[in-house]
Image 1 (cartoon, rainbow, N blue to C red):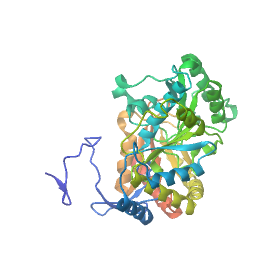
Image 2 (image 1 turned 45 degrees about the vertical axis):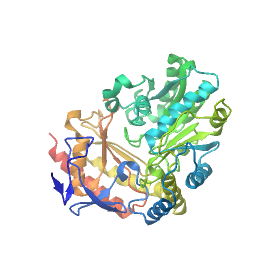
Image 3 (image 1 turned 120 degrees about the horizontal axis):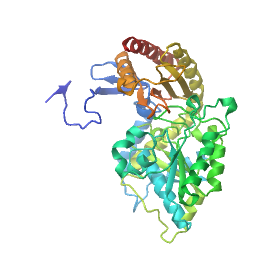
Length: 450
């Protein structure tokens, strides 16, 4: 059997069987160290997860202390102190009547719970015909069948289409590639009004909820709607008795320079799905935050129950981690730090537009996206078979930087991109180092392109 530095290889079922994976031996702060001792900047915090950086002593201590007390209880029968404390702290920072917390162990689970809860809410309210969820063409909401049904990103969906519910989708608010050929000065929010068109086309009596990432994550990093977009969305949802679900799995807990990305728009949803930064990756944790009015409907139902649950939901070990992560974010004023560093990062990213293949550059807080084009004027993407994003990732890794590559699913929506989402503890000097490596790597990539 093959081995790397004495570590046996060969039994893991990796998601990409043709890819060579780097063995990470340890991590500290914003850095990963591979088995050969090479240092790599974790420029995407995994997948916008490790917000506090690696090897945080306070979080490790909280994990260890809780493990000595109780590591697992099943929420069907028992409760525990960490989830009671964490839910209380979350309710203090969530807006308005978003006061009820349903714990899960990841983002897909939290989104799946929102799908089921929206369904049960309308049934208990005497509207059993409401079941369809409207989402956007460029979106990613998770890997479970329900969450994938709501996802717009076609490459992730196509293999499983026979299993997926064919939910309707609307236009993405993607200003750089506006499908309505509008400029910001001429924008009349056609992309927002597209929601009403879809509702009417499907019959409002059938629509349960609308789900959106407030600022888009993996499928088009840092694409942010213009101000005013979500006010129109919320007004349309209220008009037709449709729940508004904000997928804040990637954007929640300060990633965009606000505690929740919806705060940028001063509009608040009926439910928020959270994960990733909620535990900084130290233990699997997710949550669905629910408006009090939805909770009241379930509470008044004949069963007084939400017909749903997962084994590790409400896990005390994960909740203890989440509680400590939240304390650190608040005590160290990391959300304000992210907002400040985001402006610095954006300034540096704009300089990358000196490269002809760099099209759009986007950054909100410490969530950034760089979109690559073959022709900047026509915004034409590179051929998919070129695998430009993955090629750039390999070059960056060789130079000591990890970036998160991706590709939007159609030419209309865009092409190859990379995401940057470093830990909140990164410094300006480290941002300079990260950008220097990225600039050098893009130069290498350009030399290799046909």
